[in-house]
Image (cartoon, rainbow, N blue to C red; front, side):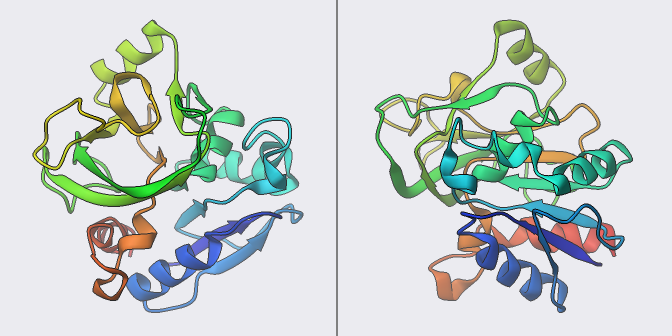
Length: 229
């Protein structure tokens, strides 16, 4: 399997994603600069976290107009799997690959901590190594992670099983601060209609090896390797 990591000015999780992919695949992913307009054929494209372009205008807004994103969108529309994490999720909504927007956290503060997620769907390339309903622990680090969409879009996401992850407490319950940013319906990650694009605010690449303090993110990368090799 060949993977790529898109790198923007202000990316700060591109190397984390590189390491997670290297460990899972056994070879170096392609590191693609935002100013490029094309790159070699790959089986998976990842859009990492960080603060692309310093989050000027809106988080992910300027990055969505980078030359490379036109190619990413074209490949996504042809079925290439795309994983966007944190700022990558913001970029994917800004360029129209995923619905909704990511707004400022409800408390207007930057939040950096571990959270618990419920795996709502395991019928995807990204989640099939998890059990449906499984509770996993994954770090977050964001200021603009408050997912918003209109009611009809939210109903569509729910009805089509496109909510991939939801914020919960460690025991799987809701409330009591489980939702760290105010996201509607506790949404932490969503899929596009074709289910080849996943955007999520938590960082699976930051908890993909026991030496990092846990490996709840590892099944995502292992599953992608298995499915795409």
